[in-house]
Image (cartoon, rainbow, N blue to C red; front, side, top):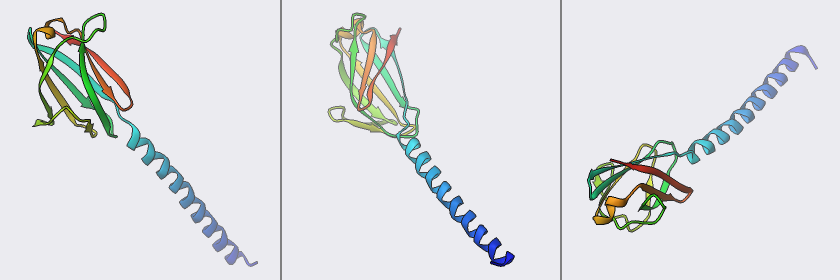
Length: 136
């Protein structure tokens, strides 16, 4: 085989290997990014009997919120009635699962005499639980 033909063959082999490595990396990175999600949960008292919980998806992937509960220090659920829920400022119904995409924010307003005893807000998602202390 002549030296010119040999250089062409090695160039083609190099290009093919580069494309294969790039494809493998692209699949790995795209799969990792689409599943990465992290919720930031915070809650505070608006009035003694009203709590506002904020749930923000800080990741790149989607998170399905299945429920939001309020508990006392012992972990027992308190009676707080959800009076409003908003995703990015738009009202929604919390009776069905809510999908939060990266950067989306869910705000939940709850009211009732039991809210006075609320210490934690617990967010149940398809991938686990997130919680925060209710700040005064």
